Length: 337
Image (cartoon, rainbow, N blue to C red; front, side, top):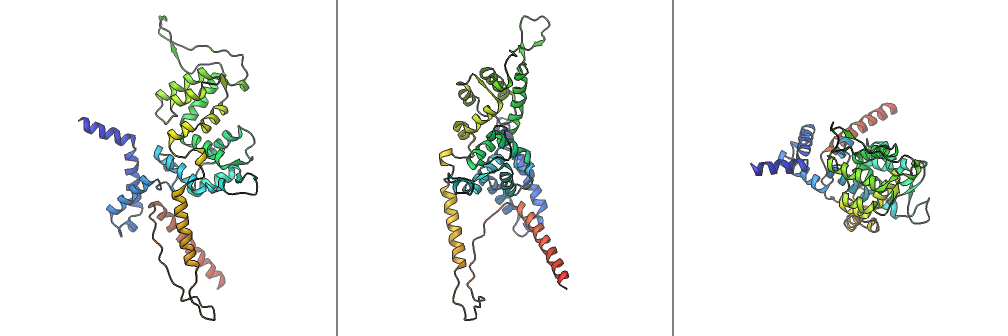
């Protein structure tokens, strides 16, 4: 009985049911393609892609945010795909990095998740810009770490925003039970209401509310000990000041485990190695063999490149793209006739 309970708890913590349901859905949706390879191979490749973190590529946003592992996988994939945006020199910057707007970063996100919501990108941009004009330029590293906090801890931050507004209004979101009360009713401790919203809220009281939130929340929260350490040196703070502190805290970044430290953000030896291999393959294909004087290239050598496994979902998109391209060809042919 204990082992069964442990297995059920493990399955719930790792969201096994979510992946099983998605795998079965993918199996039914792509059964014609899968019948050529077999169900066993499909499940093997599916869960290998989950383990490697590639299962979120080109998937709908509801799936990308469905589990903590999916969110970490998406963050890591976004960093690995677009880290050169911050590494290479650009036309907007003299410090060897591209500076992009929130809209441009959103376009990059949509390359990985077509229906990624703009609202989430804007919230991440506000952490960097401190609620300034949303068309300002941001470095890749600033946006990435702010986006990590906003995307992974989105439900937690919504609750924090509500707590912050209550504290500004002079309320204490944590209800205090007074033992001497004969009625046993809950009373709220009154807070000083003589401070300007620009001054923020008292840091110690704010942390007490955050600690209580983390204890009862069913969503992912930053480690309480790290937040306590982060707020220990501040007397008062604003909401966006708190979000910026979360984004810059390397302890919280390490605890989340999706991105490297800021100093290593543009280093990815494994990906660099893969890119070098890909460039070598492309260079090899571009080298032409002996040709005739007429420039005939029919005898060029054909090199078979190794097939890269990918999640099953993109097959659906490829079939749609093939169908659209066939339709466009028919229209072209008819217009020419």
